[in-house]
Image 1 (cartoon, rainbow, N blue to C red):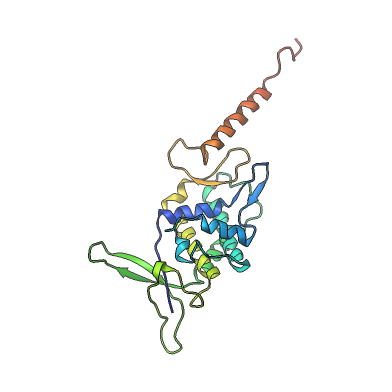
Image 2: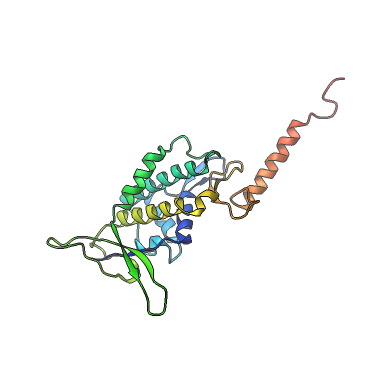
Length: 240
């Protein structure tokens, strides 16, 4: 049997933000879902960096997602967005799905169940020329008369037919990333973008940041300008 190592980093924070951002404004006043088909999930995975946590779950350059993987990833995304909505309270959540999200307790259970699809154990790594670090190794199976086996795999990708399948590995990696982000300092800086039509969550990178990206700021300023103009009556419009 084989396993893979999981380490949580700021890149994993970005991973869960990218996952949440697959629910987005479609450019026409509606909401688009980039993960509405297995092909959409395949495309999203291939757009991740080579050293992304999902590359330790599947070979993101060759893997083709199926319906099982799509369901698993979407379940984690829904749970993450539900907890994002809790994190930004008392501020408003994203308008995309605020009325359809599960309760926070249910979302926590979903993340726990997803992470448990691939059990982990801690392992201390201490290279001769570096500092010691604790990583978590996936347990990928158990012998009939002994404990679960562990062993390194090149690039951390489990071999086909051994251990948990791709859906389980993807769900576990994404759930771990979501938990780490929500338990970390980024949670307090999480915001739902208030720009018109935007439905993204973002991490506030500096005190004056109000929107997820400059284009949203431009759109918000234009909307405020038009709102002020509508509030001012035209000259001669009021009798005296």
